[in-house]
Amino acid sequence: MKKLTQADFQERRAVLAGEMGLRSIAVIATSPVAMRNRDADYKFRADSSFFYLTGFAEPEAVAVIETFDTAEEGYSYSLFCRERNREMEIWNGYRAGIDGAIDDYDADEAYAIDLLDEEILAKLQNKDKLFYRIGQQADFDARVAKWIAAAGGESRKGASAPAQVIQLDRIVDEMRLHKSEQELELMQLASDISAEAHTRAMQAVKPGMMEYALEAELNYIFGKNGCVPSYNSIVGGGENACILHYVENDQKLKDGDLVLIDAACEYQLYASDITRTFPVNGKFSPEQKALYEVILKAQLAAIDAVRVGNSYKEPHNAAVRIMVQGLLDLGLMQGDIEQIIASESYRQFYMHGTGHWLGMDVHDVGSYKQGGGWRAYEAGMVVTVEPGLYIAPDDETVDAKWRGIGIRIEDDVAVTQDGPRVLTAAVVKSVDEIEALMAASR
Image (tube, rainbow, N blue to C red):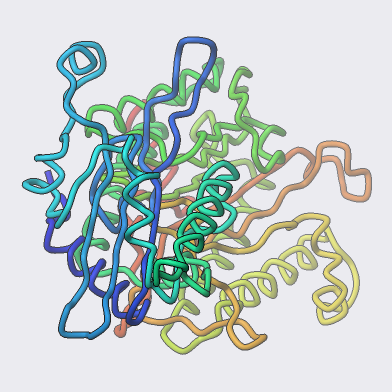
């Protein structure tokens, strides 16, 4: 199993410490445990930014990174976590404990999580800046405010509290936006597993099957590879594909309809994100094929625009122009292409953007604009490319033969110096490839 090493996490902490500057402290908590209902909780997943800096996947943990008066002193990393507890470990599994935090996770110091309020005060004193994730958790915001007040109350003893409180995400989000080769390897594995799942779905689907049964085929591939879904899977047959975030997945798949699947897994907390749309019976109708070809052409042009130096918006602009021309050619829209694009009247059929950052979160962190304009692509960024067209079933402005058709095609694309690298290329997407794959499985 491919994993990041402690050296990777050490390197990230060192970069963060350098960005913080001297006499600074950063405090970052992991996610709280979330209850599903009464006595049952959701399976715990560490906060992405916390894990990014620590590699520590247990709940109830806080990391503290401190810098000192000179650069030569480097930085210190402390981890507050749960202590070993034999009775609790019998019920809920083993814990790293204080010794494990030092021996296995390279903390310079480790403390029981119950001591956080007490120990943090000394660490805050005589620091100029405090970095933490402002606004992430209301109860943690209140806790930090109390720490600052308490640390400031020691001024009569010659100590001082941080004079500046700075949003930690401003630094960590930019770090996470640029993926290392090791991170790209994990994302490639997630993409390959997700591609296998989509291939299985194309081979398994048949008229009369329930959407949730097709979802189960995806989940089997995810699970057998030790993965979980990156997000709630969308399996929308027929007009359900026109609902962008359809997740009920409880309807019967009909002969003659398309099915849109937007589903993928995460591997070692790194996500993939794939959408494919294909015919339930294995054969596109003329209308389905005509729309599909327009979207595929738009997607290929958008992928080609994901290049170093290009504006983040260029793939979207490329996709929109091709899809609007396609809608005009097919008679679904009338008018001048420039006016349609300028007025955005195409949003009747294409109402979302063409992509988003991808990483540890499906909609990953990182700003889309810099200096008031769309930022330029840089090597190491990963973005989705997902144009689509959705003809509402009750849209009487178009011929009835088009209504209720929803199509989206989505791939994950890494930006490299040599051009776009499609991580999710292992799953077919041309009409001929899809029909051939589906015919071979019948």
